[in-house]
Image (cartoon, rainbow, N blue to C red):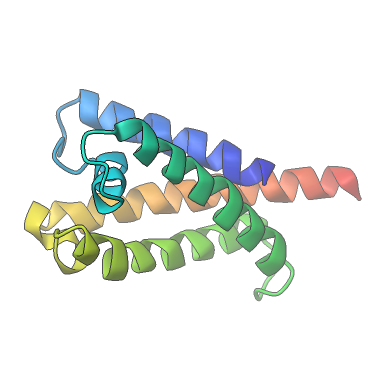
Length: 137
């Protein structure tokens, strides 16, 4: 789960920088999560859920899937998991939040930008997991 934490911290920093730069500020995932939970305006809840998904779901996913995915690159495995997560987000979270399939109500940049963020997230997830498991062996 440490890999999930590290990757989520990196992703969160990138999300904050994106917003600070004024790039697609309406695409605010923690706010979307809070709104879906009936807690609109409580961004802290959204951030908490965002971190729990990254730490628990993705941390467990890399631990379970790293040795089961083809090849021996934990970074590639993390990227694969990140892409799967992105697809899940685009096909479930975005429509549930009212943003349409692939978040297209935000325009075509939304799926592209979130894919890039998930690729970076997955690479960090796999890199840290691979690094920490090599050290443990």
